[in-house]
Image (tube, rainbow, N blue to C red):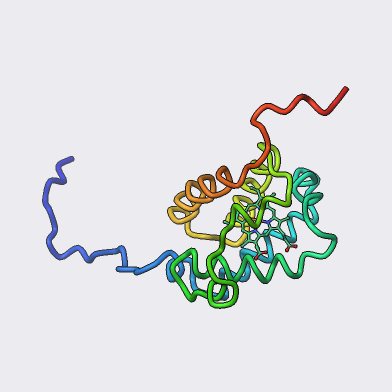
Length: 149
Ligand code: HEM
């Protein structure tokens, strides 16, 4: 079956999107992602250590992660407009973040991206970027002694 004919009229399918913020679908989709992320953190037994690091009420965290991600994805700089430079590592120092918390954060975000239908290519790319950021936030040793007797 020969199909070596290049069709110069094939339209370019990939739109010229400027930023991940536009690609994900703007503020409404970022908001949906963040809401699902914290809902899952509340609901899923697999994220219990991650949930335990957070305050009982997650409203403040929801608002701030939404503001932050809009800018981080190349959209409006809501977070820095309000708080200046994010200084994320410094802001996370009060919380115990080891491999377990990092991996639960990443798994929770991965599940939230799946459930809110983030486009697959963007989802995969963001998994890589989130890993870098979350790993940089770790402030506990790699191999803590097993907490179980
Ligand atoms: C690695 C595991 C992580 C843990 C355990 C963690 C935990 C937390 C906690 C406990 C808070 C305080 C929430 C509150 O105000 O009630 C917080 C705030 C925040 N986190 Fe994380 N986080 C993690 C990773 C990340 C990552 C990867 C990002 C960004 C991509 C991020 C972005 C933020 C932002 C923007 C805030 C608000 C900071 C502020 O202005 O106070 N976090 N995080």
